[in-house]
Length: 323
Image (cartoon, rainbow, N blue to C red; front, side, top):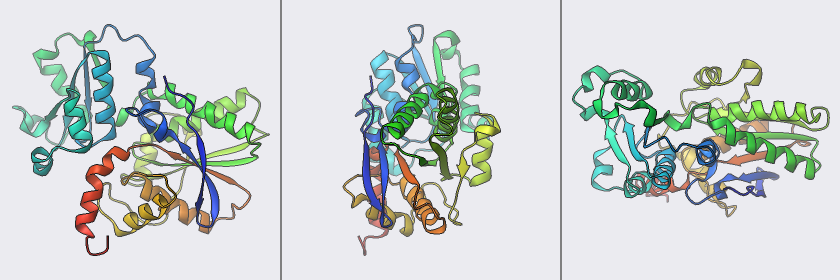
């Protein structure tokens, strides 16, 4: 269903880096969601009648899952921990698009047993609801996808991404390559590093091309990210986590992030406003703090630009005097 995403050169910090344009994979399944949900598009799920998932009300995964459910003819219940009053009154971005696709977005705070769910992780709350709600009686017809697509099925599509990168590195005769991508749950980074290592070993390329996967945390810090990795892969497959000494609060508006976003978008490539600014700030620090002049950098553009429709107005309101 997806063609191989192109690789494009971009000037950053006075040097040329490469951008893996996964944002161009598909209009409805761009970026890492195309990779994470690839499995469900290429395997038989004819027994499924309903999709149940969780996440934030403006998550990129919400929109992509709504498209998946619509294509497959599934009912789609999506549990969130909060929907802002502004968004309820002015639906936009991923939230509005998902509703148009038929998504049933449920705020767990408004459920009858909300008190019992208080303090639970959203995925755990979702499982509790499904186990106790009689409308979910036939579990065989349900497909559960955890927040952000963080599950073993994500590895199928990420393995394809690893194959594309290895083939590109061979074709371009790269000797040293550092792949960089910012992480939320760390699913893409963990499975990508695992697949790069395993596929290179199988192809006997370990001594031909030195490939390293780097990532940074955009949620919860480095230790949180390691904990996420540990639930997905063995420690030997953990990607290298780097940082710039700053702690980033997911979704919090930052002048540094907004300035970096404006800088990288001057390349002619639109990046998204949640993960990419942090990613490029950390990459900037890494390039300025390490001797990597002979190493090629491949940045994974993981899509998500639909979310800019809500994030950009927030930034413009906050920094209106300088925008």
